[in-house]
Length: 232
Image (cartoon, rainbow, N blue to C red; front, top):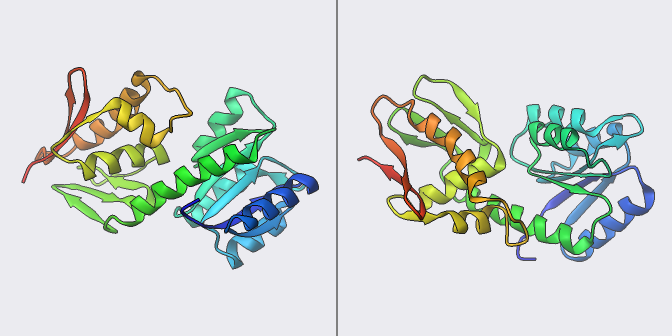
């Protein structure tokens, strides 16, 4: 793994928690293990992780509620849910709480490391961008996963929306294939449809169109994908 992080593992299962901490530590990460909400809050403040692996069913609370609390304090960490709950509603709630990914138990440790590597690579790319990007009346804060529209309203972006925007910005004025976006954002082990990418583009395009100066445009390129145009 090319990137290493400070990982807070929030897991009340003793065997799984210990296994994750030991395994991730052995491959180069710095880890802390919290087996309940109280300890997780302590390590979040003192350890300042940039990655959190969050179980949902905890003995003294709910991992989704805890994640929401953490997101109110900081947005600059990767949040990945680990849960035996496989129902669609719980997954949606996890993503709405700010989760970048959701892995259903049981899972292979190799799968976890592949997903972490992809998320860390994305974070490295985001960290290489300016703190604030101004385009006409639009503002982008990549590290905060936030944008401001032409009316001055601040909008939250999901990890995938931010990743797609980052790709288009770095390849501005170039046509970007949908398949390239899928490989970069979802990974080759995932198989979202091209329509899935289109749905994410809808929100980004609506945000861009709020600028009265039309300084940024996300164009559809027939049969290929998208092109982000910045008008100087």
